[in-house]
Image 1 (cartoon, rainbow, N blue to C red):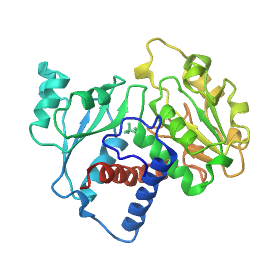
Image 2 (image 1 turned 90 degrees about the horizontal axis):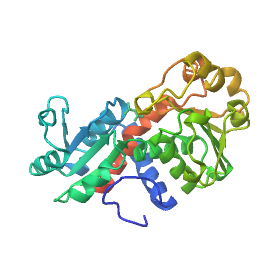
Image 3 (image 1 turned 135 degrees about the vertical axis):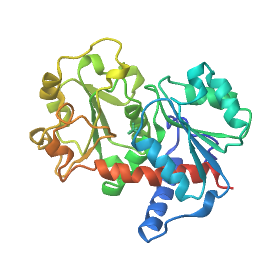
Image 4 (image 1 turned 120 degrees about the horizontal axis):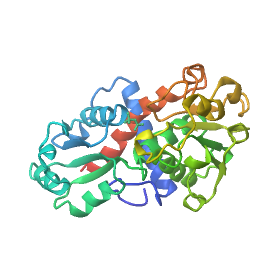
Length: 308
Ligand code: CP
């Protein structure tokens, strides 16, 4: 691996060898677990704290499982029941938690830049892992998506990938693009209604599309995104039925893609809005494989950051 990771904040500017190294490590851990290994005591005596200011099912649970399977102690910080509700600031919360000798802080926050802010203000040797900040980055999702694709299509330079939905607000899209470009994906198409497409200057090397039927044509991988209404400051969309009509991934649209194209979605999925149930549950769906890979990718990241 070319650089030693101290924190994991973004995949932007991460080189291909570092990404491949993390994916290889995740794959080795997956194989060890498949052969019956229940716990690998790499992180015995280490403490990992989940600090989630936004809801999560997959990321929080898989970080907890990952840390426990590596032998670490895990604390799930209860934001609603914490002294943040009495006005304690983020920095005071950080320093209070640090005083209890944490080794890693897994942070999700609605504000882009919060994990980096914590890196700059952490007084101790705590490692910070970004579990999703605003629309900025979700690096472990980018890694687990890359791993899922690599398991089926190892030659990234042959791949056309379409990412469809609320790209504007999506930290997943940003981290996926950074990983896919580092790994050499041939073409990346970003698709959605004009109001949900980003400024093209933010995604050099990608093409932007408003017509999903065109964007899906010949694609090897289709990554569907949820409409993130919690990040929309005004109603940017027609009603959900009209959205599904134009941007929902149906079986009929899937037939326009390359034979056997992979269907991914970071979850949570909204059936009948961005994806039809028959596609989400169909033979080309890799959605539950993504979830399973999330545990191994997060084990790899924690092992990389924390193993002595
Ligand atoms: N993909 C993802 O981040 O899911 P959660 O919000 O459930 O963690």
